[in-house]
Image (cartoon, rainbow, N blue to C red; front, top):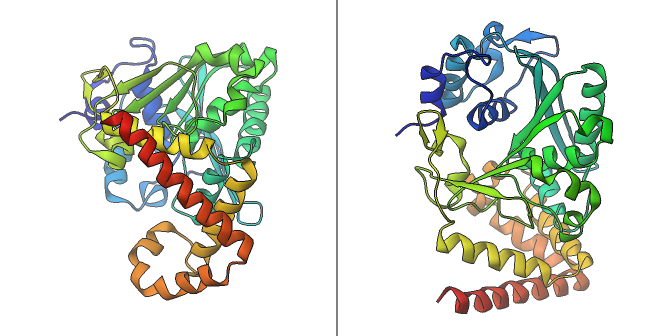
Length: 345
């Protein structure tokens, strides 16, 4: 089955011969997960050993740096900033395309607790620190480089791209060619009614796999394209699983029934809680996770049984108010499951 690796190997046309498309966007969005030098560098000159340690990513980057279409793209203004104190996880990089446009690419969530806590915070607050940083980044780059531009990202990176694009001045937003959100989560309802969002939403291209969980979180008003994945469930979030037919994604007509149910449950559950209740529940949840003294979800998953006593003790030590909100939140989630189960049946 073909994915963007096939596209990298087989589309050797320049951007003048074959215009920029959504698969190009996914490739540049995925590149934001890599580590780059801070100086202006062509993709073909990257040192793979310093860019990534993950084997499948090495295969990906090798194909990028020898591709006639991509190798001469220049990258610049790479930034990476994780701040545990203010719960911020942010990274971005700018790609200068040979057709005198540019692509501002935002990294999605990494595996750190800080990154995931910031994602959860989106359920009750706007903007979170990474969204503010994304806006600052776009303002800075677009003032330094007077090109028309694309802006995008995968996962949380897609959300950051939409938020930043919606809050630019008119002079800068007019230079936006398109905004790409590759399975990026939505926003709290209030954001979708703002004039800033309404004025830019026609430029948003949102792409989600048929069993999207991350991309359908919270609320979205823009049209989204549903594509086929070789995986199932949450694993469909991986761009390597997104199937293409030569130079286009394989398009599907609708989300899976299970996905519609899951997303209805989650959004109904979130809506049933006040912002304060969401905040207390999320803070309590991550207080418990931090009691493991581990810093990433991968570590917690691998050591869950060993760390279970720490987790149980941490839950026991929560004050009565927090325990009350946790029980209320669990009850609200169960009720939401039952309400939406009737609709599914």
